Amino acid sequence: MTRSPIRSLFAAFAIVASLGLAGCGYNDFQRLDEQTKSAWSEVLNQYQRRADLIPNVVATVKGEANFEQETLTKVVEARAKATSIQVTPDTLNNPETFSKFQQAQGELSGALSRLLVVSENYPNLKANQGFQDLRVQLEGTENRITVARGRYVKAVQEYNVLARSFPSNITAMIFSYEPKANFSVQNEQQISTPPPVSFEKPASK
Image (cartoon, rainbow, N blue to C red):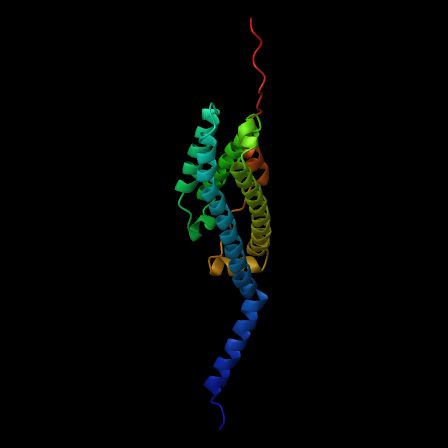
């Protein structure tokens, strides 16, 4: 049974179109888009893990008499702010929302860092095994956040290079593959750096 000329022409067109899409990075966009989504999901998982640990940390610290209330309040407020931001798949394509999310998480990192520094001045907390266990979990989570963010940064960099390079940028334009928002590491370092803590009493006049 022989093919009709129209079928042969259609098959040839499909092959050429397929090769053309592959050559212009369409398949790479599919792969990298999924890669960034997966990396972003892991970032969110680790941020959620941290948020889930904080209530236990706060409850433990509240049991310490005369603990610096301002530090504790800032942690509670920073957690509330960070968890109030609605994160959706569109967040990756919305630089403004992404920036707000990053800033909120950075402020929470700074508040937590200060709390851990201040806790060093309270012997009972230092001797509290439950608090020390929570501290280890928090520090481990911060490390996992750093690793997850690093993977996301790398994935987005690869995706954005493809979206902005020729001729794949034409494919990006046709299929609406916009560059994705990324973490600004330098900016977050400034946000999350806790202010210096001094435990020295002021000299009496």
